[in-house]
Length: 576
Ligand code: FES
Image (tube, rainbow, N blue to C red; front, side, top):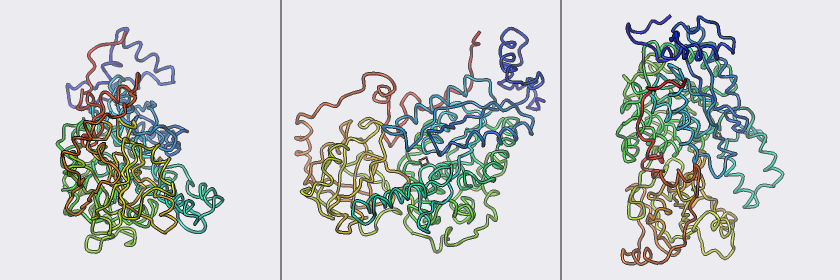
């Protein structure tokens, strides 16, 4: 069955091809699962890395998807072996799922390398599972395909569509403003989450599933086929076939994850109005692959890309609508002149072949370059004395009249301070103020939670105010919206200038010119820096200590510094 190039020994044969005691042990214990002798004759052994979990509802159908992947693997002459990986449920994990993305990446990397597999299919979906899995796989560099969970069906409530996350933020503010009852609020919960699958807005999960398409490491429509639709299972079956082909051709992840592929992914992501979280994940992935992508590239590459997909939170529709309108390929077809069409994909064709003639069935959902949903899309990378390492904002989700704004800071030292004071009737805040939140970075929180879209003061909500400029070292959910400056680097907890901002300081956001300025003299900033600071409690042990010691800042993808790069797939020693 081994039809590889002559002389190349498949890595699984280093375990199963031996006639000695070690070979006996590797084969015999797998035979306990009913595998016959001839599956060890040199066929591709395919690992299916599954982040299924009932604590991650977005991934809770991935055992079923895995069964379809296995069908495709068997059909093509491979042998599928499913294994679990830590599941990161965005809605359940505390303090935040992002804290554990690197732990998942480390687990996936070592699981792939340590086991006798020739290729791997990554089953993930909920926000941090997909990037964590790809990062880990990239540091081993076997043939790899991503199969995502797929979005939930459109949310439905009171006769209309509602979007995961995006409408939660709206409803929550409506309740606080007295415009929605608590009974209505609770009633909307079941309507919002109607099926298994990821958030059905262009949140972080769908954004990164689309990034996988843009990188060429997932099959077309990976991001948009609903999680419970038969098409999702068909895609699993096709991915099972494709991974066996990739192993036979020895096409490894590094052959797809090139600079061109990253540029395609960044531009696809901009046209979709993707999540700001993808920026951190792509920077981390580039670090794993040795691809020279910087934060500034996100701004530069997305400048000519308008918003094509009319999907919440930047637009009106939901992922199910995007799927029926033509999915990511139809969006990519609109920006084809900006893409590297000769980039390969795991389906065996180039990106140009994937999107050639990709139809659009609904121009309300997928617009054109000539008449886009919005001219401003992508990512704005801001710099200035408040963010020497950069900060980002998503103009497509912001209020146009706030993109250039100067205001007086209302500062919260941490999230507890924010929660304690935000609804204080005496809080000195008005609609022109700028809300500043500190100590929500990768080390400071820890894990950089999605709190950057901090809710507005109740007294302003009651006046009808629905957006203000907000600045923090936090992230925000991909489903969120507003004029929100995120990922201020360096974070406050490691002494970034954000830590020196005081209430009453003037700050100017000049989005079109990409600047973020704190109008305080350097002498005064130095005086503040020299003043005694409250001591931060540092973690004493465990993974939190590892994060504290080694987490990089957002401009480097928040990876752990010792995980940057790759160690390949070679394991020099036997276990027995
Ligand atoms: Fe899992 Fe949104 S909470 S994708």
